[in-house]
Structure formats: structure tokens, C-alpha cells
Length: 362
Ligand SMILES: *Cc1c(COP(=O)(O)O)cnc(C)c1O
Image (cartoon, rainbow, N blue to C red; front, side, top):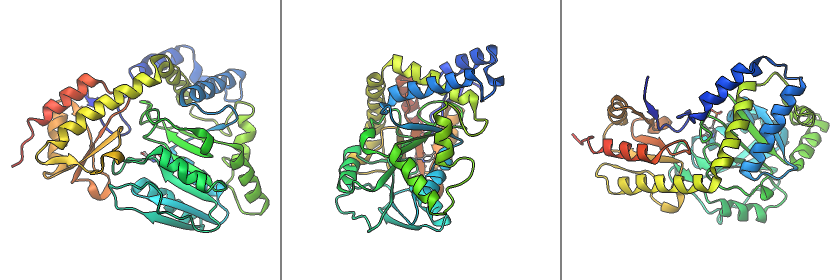
């Protein structure tokens, strides 16, 4: 697929910098070094530090490298829930998190909102003895973004509960105050414009203590990638297993690139592009934003419902050099989704919008 621009929600277009970074790493033979070498530890350390700077993660937080965001969900359930997890569910990724807890025989409960809507959490009461609260900040399957301050207030009402936040398609755009979050995770093939295959789990000491407690009670917290093993290795700037060294290396470099580019600039640009798209589709005859309440509309994953088959739109755009995503699951043929991440250029957004003029209802 030469010369196509990926406006998909993930995997998506890569930062052009990825190619240079990869070539440089090949030249330096970084992909052949041992994950127990000093050289690897210094790469690990640099990546952790750059990421902490970029996302404003407090110094005392741990950063674990896993294989995907879904693996992060599973490790979180294993290590942070003895009995009870509670899930806010308004989409398929929240549902996945909930199902993992059920599969581990935990007592998982959820509060469900209609897909395409959100909540300010004011009417949600946590069941007694809830240990873990799971929330997806930006639900990629429906295009709903929750308000970070609403989540903060909800957590402040329930200070003893551990909060695990899925920030997969949210970062780096959404600003996250890690002081009230115990645990957050993402994978790199979305807003970080990198190839897939790396999950990043960020958590505080409260989570480590909880894992210790569960471990002591005799319940399994998993084997090679449990939080205690991960922490032990993290202290040495290492991973438990031979990790995805290429992506850990690239993540450090991309974070540095974004830091130099300026996170405020990224946020401004993201908002401008989102505004162009939403303004256009608010006025469109048969392709409309799926999320009706403006305050819940995601800035990074624009989800649109269409009266004609999504397939027809997607194929037309593809013939003209642009790839966008189908709807998720049951919405496959009824929705289209457009990624709006930092590597997407405003002039390409304008071109994409222009192409929609040629799509007719028939
Ligand atoms: C893509 C996505 C995931 C799953 O990520 P993987 O890296 O494929 O496991 C989880 N949550 C959200 C919100 C996502 O968009």
C-alpha cells in the first residue's frame, strides 16, 4: 500500500521519525544486545525518564513494559483484585476489562451506559468492598471521552479504592494528573505513532503492596510477569523476560521528540483538527457524529454514524490514498472512525474532508 495515509484509530500512521530511529538503531546493533546488559539498562532508564517527563508521571511511579494493553488489563486483575472489581462500561474495551475479571473468577460488577454516551459519575455508587475501579478514559469503540476531572472527583469520594485507568487512545493528548491515579496503561500503536507490540503499565506503590497482600493470601498473582517480579526488575532497569527492545528504544526517542516538539503545541493542533472534523460532520447530511453530547466527544478518535454502508466510504477513501477505520464490532458497517493523533497533519485532515464531498447518498 504505497503512499497511503493511515487515519485509522490504531495501528495508525507512524511518526516519520520512527524510520530514522529504527535505521539508527540497526546501525548501532541495538537489537542484538542482551537485555541483562548495562547498555540495555541505560536504554530502559532513558525511556522511562523521557516518558515520565512527557506525561508528567511522578518520580516514585513504576513503569513496566508488557506486550499489549490487553496484557496490562489481565495483569491488573491478577495483581490488584482479591475479590471485587467494579467497571464503568460504555464500550467494548471496558467490556473486555470486565470480562477478564469474570474469567479470573472475581466478583466483577459494572455500571453500564448506553454506547455513545458518558457519565459524570455523580449517580454511580461503588459497591461495598470494591478493591479496584476500572475506567476507560477514551473508549475507542464508540468515540466517547470521559472528563478527567469527573473521574478525579469520583476517586476523591472513594480514596481507598485503587483506580486503574485505560489511557490507550487518550495519551499523549489528554492531560492526566497521576497523583490521584494508582495505575494507568497504554499501548504504543495509537497516539504514539509506533508499530504495535508494546504495552506500558504505570503504577504506584499502593499497587505493589496490594499484589504482596494477594500473594501472601495464597491466591496466584501470575508467574513471570507478576507485579513483584516486574518491580524487582524495574529497580535494576530491567524487564522480567527478553522484551521488545526495538520498541522500548523507539518509545524513548519518540517521547524525547514529542518533548522537544512541545506537548502544548500537540494539544492545540489536536483540538484544531478535531474541530475541523466535528464541524464538518455536524453539517453533513448522512454522516453524523455518533456521540451527541459535545462534552463527551473524543478529540482523538472521531466516531461517525453513516446512513450508507461504511464499506463504501472506506473503499472510496482508500482509492484516494486515505485509510480510516470501520466501526467496532456490532457497529462495523454503521460507523466509520477517524484517528486524530499527533502525527496526523492538518493539511491531510483538510484533504480527507474534501474527499468526503465526493461521497454521495444513493
Ligand atoms: C486498542 C485498545 C486497547 C487494546 O490494546 P492492545 O494493545 O491491542 O491490547 C485497549 N483499550 C483501548 C481503549 C484501546 O483503544
